[in-house]
Image (cartoon, rainbow, N blue to C red; front, side, top):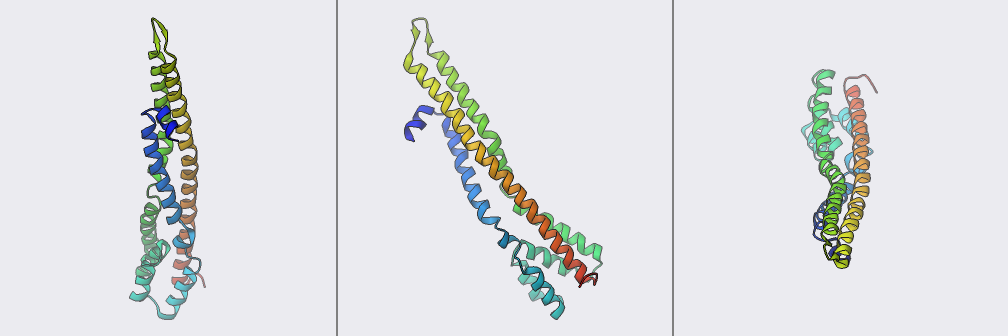
Length: 201
């Protein structure tokens, strides 16, 4: 591996740097975006049961707020349970935007890395081409410099694609996952509003 890095020249280092950041983000998001942590399966039923038994209590609101992102949305909804259905929905939407922003954390950076990697690979290719043209002299071609330029061009192009392809795949996967989680949370929050206002049992 070290021999490949040496053959690729200095343009490979920015690619290595952003690949490390990309891997760190992928690991962090894979851990943070677990569905059971974001949208616990029985939270809606437990919340409805607690609300029907004791109404809105500070203990219930605090417990929900500390539970999960979905719990925070439920807590906001119950804080506004004594207002109209429209006010409850508005409070849920505001809380939902904050939760969505939290779920989207680092995804813009991941998308940027996926876009930058091929460009950095192309930059390395250009540097390699410059090295190749630099190997041409009046006395002829210097084989060592020519080989070095070709190595820089090819290794950087390949490494740029190696970084970009999986990063883009994970970026699109996480974006779709966030959208699915947000939709699920919205649907559960609407059910809670309807039950609180007696529109659903």
